[in-house]
Image 1: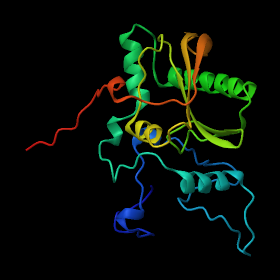
Image 2 (image 1 turned 90 degrees about the vertical axis):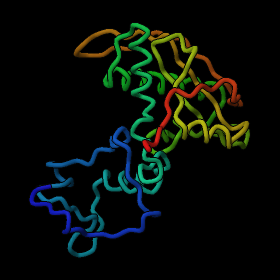
Image 3 (image 1 turned 45 degrees about the vertical axis):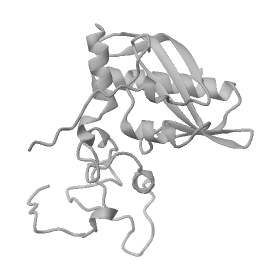
Length: 225
């Protein structure tokens, strides 16, 4: 952002076509200071001078991320920064007496994702695709010619209560009989510098539906007047 001035912009977009990522969703890394990545300039072009496409794989990944992003948008939901399931889950685990922070949550999530992948493949689901970065569900998969959406939850707690975002609730409610929950609960976390995750029990709920009576609001937005 060296020498950046607000009045010196390069693009204009209508409000309805723009997406402002919530802080907790700003995790897609763009490499800098490496060959093929951003250099000292804040601009990097995907084509060489003669029109040949650059071969850096991160460019395709970044474009795919932008085109497929379908999670919260601060422009449409100003409260999205307060609806991070990671922050809520950390608070839940700490309240239950477990050591929990962002690094631990990422390790637990990866552990749960890997377990879920193995279980789903072992029970006949095919063509698993990791969509966790840009969709309100973690995997898509197929079985018997039908598409499914998979939500993976990993927690140190016994898993009696799970944190769901409004986007997850809306998606599950609009895709009856296509949603699957893979819950990996009671996992063990050890280590400080190197976090190790192990154990845990796994539950799979196919045709996962949410009953209104089972949902409890944990936050409200109040407009000051």
